[in-house]
Image (tube, rainbow, N blue to C red; front, side, top):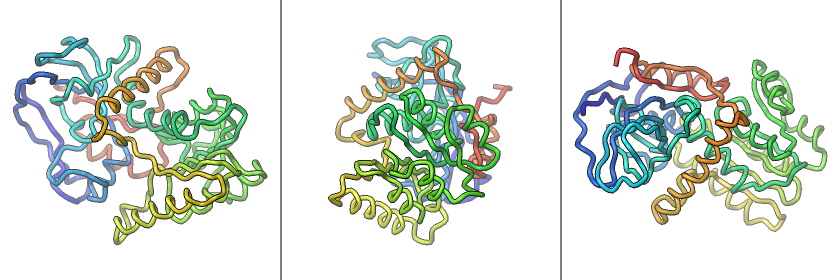
Length: 343
């Protein structure tokens, strides 16, 4: 089968991404060809196109951290799967394509009633939010947490999950997102007009149970100081990494600071979130955990308990524009990439 892929040949602007065609090999044992119905843009691809994402492959390669699609062909030993079935996959790379050859062990069935677009919003973003809340923070009902960039793709899902868990949520966002956060049940802080640390201390004088920091930079120190005794800081990314003169040095410094804080005898905890932890050493368990967590998220979507936050949609041929939109900031959810209508 032929596929169209969006290839990143080296460090460059989004417009340097090239559409190429090639023939996919027939799926071997334990493999499937999946026709993409929805993929998207995450912080990972933004970093990859600058060449600063940890453990990214050598150029050239096809980005695309996740996707939802329909199985078009199956190799042998594809237990429990069938041609025509809608599935989701966490791919890390390769998702920005018309068709993708994947290992069946990485495929998670998408239930009837959940659209491809909605399912796409909760793969990378939803897994991140779910694991930060339920596997890292593990808060108790009634506690207060702070979510930075609460109006974005990860933040929007995290706020909803936290509210379902009975938490009080303080969320930072730009002025256009303030009412949206209120509607989701969060207490909004306009990071452009307000002193965020001072406002959080006003709302939670004794400190907060957790801070989820999706911004990084010098402000990570304030995030640590906002914690109550026993609190947890989770660092998702450093938005300034791509613009740094020496990005890996900045990463090492950032990571070292978290390790040091985590070692202090004050009962607080600091974590750098890694969605791929355990992938290489414990693949079967990693896949089982992805399947368990995604299935739970899909069930919430199907029940209407979770609203899929979508910022904008772009056809595959306009992937560069989708990446531009994601990098512009001020998102109200996931930037989605869809098949071209003439396919």
